[in-house]
Length: 187
Image (spheres, helix red, strand yellow):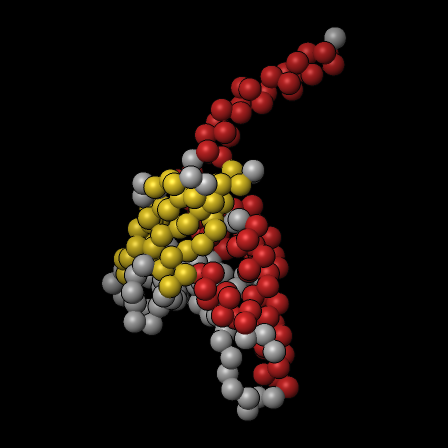
């Protein structure tokens, strides 16, 4: 009898809880917020290492996960080549925060209203970098970037970042373009 009650509850649970999870899976803004929940805990400088990529894996599209892994491999090979020949020309290396326009990254964010078109969506994000402990006190930097999401069988996933800030020394263009540049420079 206990087993039958447990099975009934287990079978009913997806219907009961599924609505909440389905809403998040069907909502690009919720997926964007999920990305920033991981981002806030990571704050990787450069391409995340294997552990960092594993943490991001659930919120990124398969295409972006593969590009990050390929770029990490290419950058490791480039670093090894530079160590062997330190006088060689410096190939492109990604340093600083690659998930935002600002090298130092964001300390807070607010996801705006996402615009969905078919299996894609764009979510504007207002970002701020305020001085953190150990940093020189300075006026907070505010800017906007755009997350590009794609619908996958597992729900909405971040597929790219468009750097919208236009900082003189910050990231410009798209995250995937920067990753492609590193992959193409692979010796």
